Length: 329
Image (cartoon, rainbow, N blue to C red):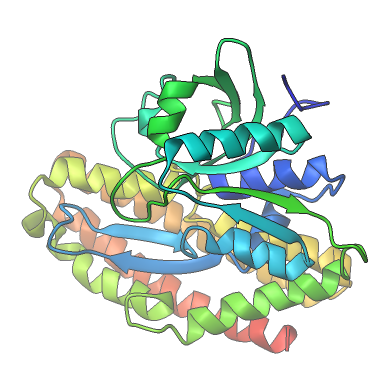
């Protein structure tokens, strides 16, 4: 049983790709950058605990929040199902598929039988779009994987991981509001305002522009602080640039969203900030390359250069977010 009537959308980031596919089933055709932006998806986080061998540098809001924010922004009916029972989780998923609904799933792709991942990550998202007689489930991944089939056994394991950011068999569906979608221009401005306020006034110094300055101060020490600098720095660089961020630590997608907002609202200043964020995105791509280079060659100079660029990016993004807050007030 396959529920797709057309090719699935195969995007760049897992949660936003999943949401685009769920929306398209409801005949809502919006872009992935718009989904990311209207949900206020852009952020910055630096996180490290004693249990973490490698610090985490991220560029988006925390998992699940993107989905929650999108539903609130567009007035969608979000139905979330979580359970500690693998049987109840499977029964719920099959019932939703049988009813004709695509289902968003949160899981650890490492456990799926088609995965080649060499790391664990419990906050990956896919859209489940079908089930066959061999007990395989059709899942929509991001680029370059696209549509994949996973065994029921591996899916059950993947859906119930342990560790940071994990959920117990989280599944969700979206339905349209009875009155239709709200004004998209107004929703876009609200998403921008939400992201800007959080970025400019973060709850702790690890987030927003303050977190950027903090990580910039710490970068030069990473060769000494990391247990395995070569592996750790390569992992940090990959997460920043290649692990579903769309490039430039999500700043490329944010720039594309701002350009769409300029078209929808006919406010030219949003296009100006979009252009500026494309430049910022390039800075983060350069930072990732320098961090990777530092790991490969044990280069302190590369980390010092990366640190300088991150300080510059923090100042620039602070200015841009202040401008966006003014535009979206």
